[in-house]
Image 1: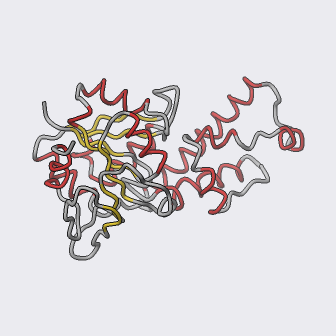
Image 2: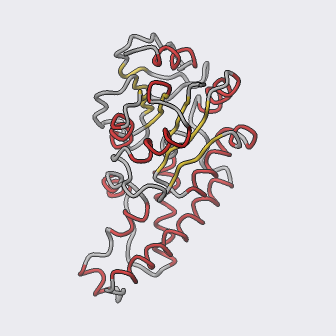
Amino acid sequence: MSPALVFDCDGVLADTERDGHLPAFNRTFEEAGLPIHWSEQEYGRLLAIGGGKERLATVLTPVFVETAHLPTDADEQRDLVARWHKTKTAYYTRMVADGLLPGRPGIARIVADAAAAGWTLAVASTSAEVSVRAVLEHAVGPDLAARFAVFAGDVVPAKKPAPDIYLLALQELGVGPEQVVVVEDSANGLRAALGAGLRTVVTVSSYTADEDFTGAALVVSSLGDLPDQPATVLADPHALGVDGQVELSHLEHLLQTP
């Protein structure tokens, strides 16, 4: 069985949170006539909550529901959040299609190398599948994107930091934990992957640089693309010796570590 390389989406394939999801949420609030505008700092705190619909639901406090004349019935509120999220996803995917969210350094390179070496490729994300596929295609190109299995959105009941999305990926891909390397960008994502017993490389993103990445097999600023976009090594517990960019050989070495 070939090894598998599984990526998170937001912050890993592209640095999407600050420049993509946040403005899409705020445009949704504006369109809905809601007096809400999340700042970068506030949105950074909300990232501790896995899933866009779950973040949207935080605005439905009793006081806000009353002052904004929103429904009080739980089912109606769920429908409202779903409509908001659909609008937000449409704004977001349009931004991706317009090329406003480029892939992070090293993503296209390492995906191409892994595909050529016969690795199984996948994405495991809490974001909506349509958003994930839009980012993936833009980051690696349509041909390589077509080779990916995508596990996204509400396919599992508990989102990261629960390990459910990674446990589902293992089951559907038919691989064991010892055959998988994950690329994540956040502490929640790392906890999810570690909970499934997976070796995890962390590429920190704009909102996650100061988080606790204890347990990661490697922590870098990005996967890197030499010579113009070198990676900085932040933690290398297995002494991989990354010099400017993470290579497929480094990931192969991780699969041999206990």
